[in-house]
Length: 353
Image: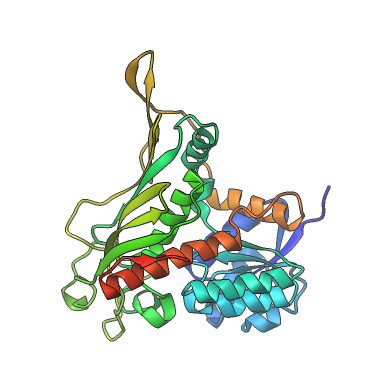
């Protein structure tokens, strides 16, 4: 039996806790180190998880016995910590988004090329069973060539941690585009195989967040609101992306808008297509016996995407498989997001190089 991989986690907030639970449920991993600047939270999580290696500075954790490190901190710290961990020879799991922007993402990629460790980006939606099925259909050629994608992720009221780091651009890099859109853009390109976006035309809006005290909602991830805090990001975005003359992608991504909440990706090919929902059954659109037909594949919905992702990361660290989401793909996603923000600011289509 192979030796367990010793893993440390930097950042024990909401997503760090999700990853910690996934790792403790993964037989091939041993959680040996935790790091957080919140001392009571660090002690509580250490006790809950049975981990004795507790650190209040990530640099100290990088000197520990951990062979691999999960980076689960606010976006502004991703580049600094990922580069340092790779420099220390650690394998790195980097929670999405890769960084604040493509420039920082490229710095991480450069560090990875020099490191004996590897890096995997946290694109957990690739592990969803419905996503795996669509990918199989595309790779088998059952849709023909995919020529259009539609990515929609709308939260009627879903601004997270209003007034905190999520809504402060210097800490987050942006609003729903970099928080939610990063998942749907990555998944759209991974499903279709189109990884060369060439131009983006987009518009972002901030209609709810700037008036924090007037914002009506029924729940708030990472809340409650900090009314003395900052909201200087978008809360809604829409646009159009070109992949040369091969394909296009239209999108609508929102934390808050006066429209029905919905979340799906359409994959459109010349011979068939699919709608992959966030919370509804997958639908395949095709033809059968000379008639139009909809197929609803059966699959096990009761899977833990984070545990599957952890298993793939460990396999990559052992050299048994490539990373499930590469840093180069993470850079591409950030280039697309940068172009979307630039297009909105300058009111024009922006080329992506």
